[in-house]
Length: 174
Image 1 (cartoon, rainbow, N blue to C red):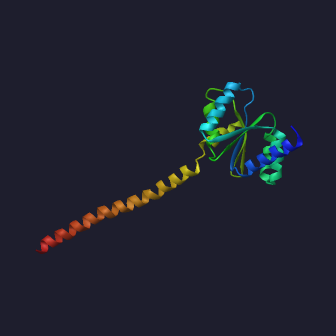
Image 2 (spheres, rainbow, N blue to C red):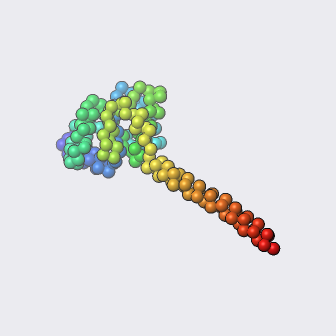
Image 3 (cartoon, rainbow, N blue to C red):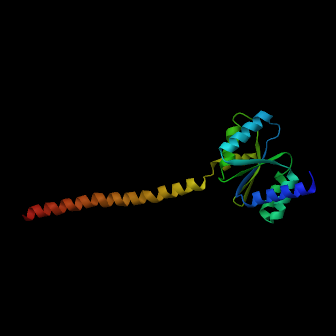
């Protein structure tokens, strides 16, 4: 790889890291070509971008961004590394869990989730359980709807009781 090719690759990675709130670093070495192709297909289906990168280029790209929180990931960028970029925080974790039902890898080395760093494969369960922004908004809407439904229900039932009392009083007066 020439110097200009390296500079271009670093710049592309830097842009990718800057524009991504969620990315995972995994080890997918020792997978067969067939397994890697299946993993890439699954990534495509789940809207996760998978890149196999040289660690030194990834580290240089992260250093150029100037965000100190990325420095904790430098330790995870050793050995074979695959980086998974996603628009949903839990998508790569769910994908890795699903893929490992039939394969031993990929193994999670680290993840960057909205300025938080998670390291080690033991974090995969917790990361897969994270709710997406859409799921959280749905939960909030359900929580807000519940009291409103109770109030409306009480008003409706109370309204029929009041109107029934008024009719009974009217009938007595006649």
